Image (cartoon, rainbow, N blue to C red; front, top):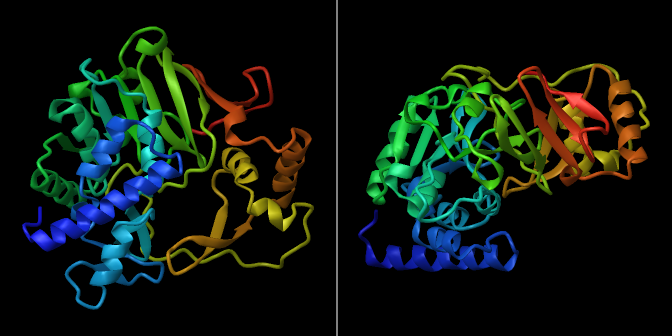
Length: 356
């Protein structure tokens, strides 16, 4: 951690301002998590990032230092790792982190153990460790360079959770069981290994998983061997996908966008800006080609989507409108040994099978 008194004072002041903004917005309400955000220095875990043009913005570069300092103390997601032309790791938006940590429903003083899938910069692991202690947090990632850097930054800031190089799909059975599993990467379905590594129990004592599925967060509780059920949280959550290895799923260059003649569609352009419609689309058609226009802060200002079968998007839109434009909070997830289903309004409502 920096020993420069002036920088330490400046970062503490900006961190306090960010925490206050998160509290004012209602994203950070738990006093214990507020203390963690006040104490854990995000700037140490994000010494550089890449803007939407791919330019590196760094604390060590005189030309970009001020932009770096502002960005790491704002409510912004920051791309921190690139492979080829693709972003492969990031520091999540602090407001989303706060929402997820509060939704994890941890309890102090009862020996809860948490497994984090997706170490990334180590910042979220530090927040968890500040709250629960070194022995109660296990964090895994597939990328050796990320793990090494995160471990060093955690030690620098005084935190020593279990940091493990591993395929997050398999969890980390050596230190199981876990009361909570939190993923900071998008999943297409719940890995069976995670369910096996959750604590037994009933009701609130059962192990729980919180993860981005599609473009929203789902929280499920273990209900039996390889069984779980829960609901999606309100709002959106866009995360990079879970990877199985250092080269898995990483393009060597930016993929070319599809080409071909456009045609008219019954799906209005406004629907693409509606997170509720895009959530249902992310469940029914999870592998569409999307393109986003970004502003200077990396926030999306427009979206386009390519599909080989527009009739499917139109079918989803008709269903969406027939059910009064449901948001993610009206959906749930049921997992058993045979299949995984997302359902609308109840297990007996419209449902869609997830692809493993």
